[in-house]
Image (cartoon, rainbow, N blue to C red):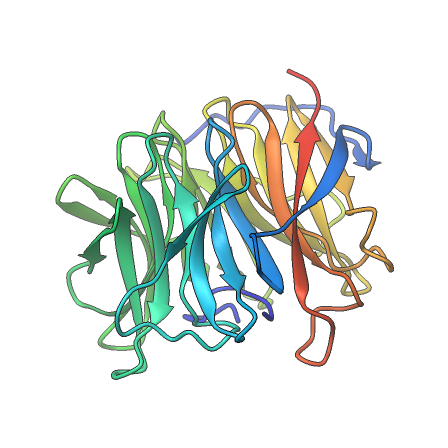
Length: 308
């Protein structure tokens, strides 16, 4: 499975600005890495972890078919949806957000239309997620109030982030930026969004969806892609440095901790995706080298942040 960045564009509570001391530290603050493997899978990708330690993502079986995944310890729940692409790679079915009570969100490429379909999933039941005017939609995050975030394309091929609260969709657009994607929303309604700036590099923001965006880039990173966020506002990023290498970054109480999975041989393919209130982190890396179609398959991991 190659990179699962958004195929809409990325093939990737408004706060008062305060002055804080920030240091980029290598590996400190993140430890106890272990690979995560779905039973019988030849590849596993981990995108979200809820407060019970249940993991959501995708896996590829021995027949090279991709499935959505909910993994509770070693118990695997396979999530398949009619009409979804199952060929491993970007566009195949995957779950990206998972609430404490088991509701999940994800998306896939429709095998008939070729567009992306977003969905809410709970106990075998799917509900389509379609913002008004959307022709292609991806869902990435869900909180325990079933508020959902993601991104969509409109009929003019313009991308917007969105938040869904009940039956109300609110677009998320950032002035001076294009192709916004909302990845996560915590139980306080704080939303993590990333978008392209005028230099075609990714910036990250926080918003409540009611106006106002706070820039939350990682110091020293060329690109900052914010992903998971818990109820305390702790965050997980994937960053890109000046050499093009990817690293995970864990943000806790004003400090950014850069990390790489110990099995990421060249320390340049680690990506952070999910974070829960207990500071459990999930993500993936390429065991054989750089993320590239010719590289080895990606491998999901679990790690622990420290300390609240």
